[in-house]
Length: 471
Image 1 (cartoon, rainbow, N blue to C red):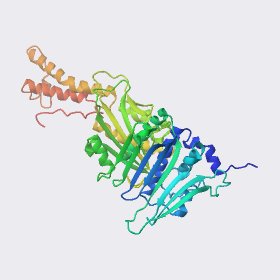
Image 2: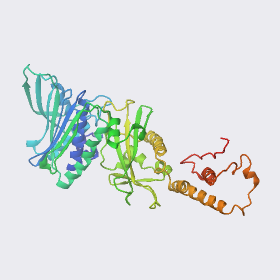
Image 3: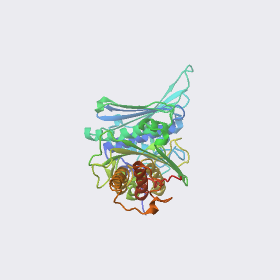
Image 4: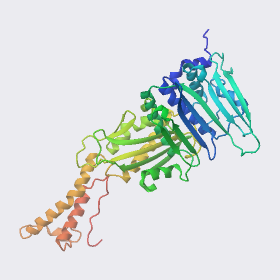
């Protein structure tokens, strides 16, 4: 008979699979789990504060929100059956497993004096409950209550106060070494910055990293009357018609894409390529720029050569950064620009509303590809001279720069040798090329129109019709 391990022990033995393979990885995942649990809890005019600080030899993560709070009987469910969840359908996170994995990692690496998940909560502000939780890894089956309440306190509150609710969660983790801690901050900072293009307008977020962990960090998102798209427009300095916005619903999955081309601060692109700034969201929540980005459904589509070939580019992933490259560039090619992409894949058809589940599935890739192709086609129409294969760009340069010069030269040649040039009389008949040409400037204009009609790259500009005096 095959003996099944205790659920909590099974999770404990596979913490690395859940992203808890090192102090640095555990910090990133714990911050993400606590913050996204708070996102689920807050409602209108929500507030979330996340504080990272040193406490002895450990790192303390404190997450506070003014959400719904928890009933005293539900606190133990946070660490109850390991594969059970208090979340409803369509909420974010790992459906209860992420927080339990964080606590199991803490139990293994943190001394008992600092151990446990400290939860302080109030439901209707009539009383405050403070509880420290552990997980019993020996709980024998999936239905077992694996939570251990090490201590619990209850505080009464007087009637003379304004009603409130909320929860504070504290957890200690092993302190990563300075280099690993710095790397974790480089992952978390873009995550919290990217919230600007997704969170509700009335939500306030305050993230503080104390100076005792090295370089202090204070990142805020304050309530604003601007919706996420307006915030994007404000940041890139563009009107709505200067960006591309494509939205499509495929089955029960809604995909939103924002795209914008803007000039580089420097005069030209470096040898490393042109920057491609990608903001990835799963159900309106930022995805971490961590691990193997190419495994993400959004990243996998963005890296497809078929997506960029019509624009004359290749896309590559260098570290955590996407770059666009173009072989065969020369000094005359305009490459001093960068591209910004915002891609949100949501499991509901509602745009930029409630924050829901973060996981992505590879089955979304075809839908993401379809929407990105449509978005880049529209972006190419806005910026044809920048998002076009080089062969067509150079043909267009000849078309715009050299046609007038050639026409001027031909006109001068005709003027200089009028007595020696034999011209077919049909050219001077109505509808002929030289019909009603009254001056050298008329002839030059006629030549320019004809040469543009013959040489214009059709993908960049439609042929200009040749004007005749009858039109």
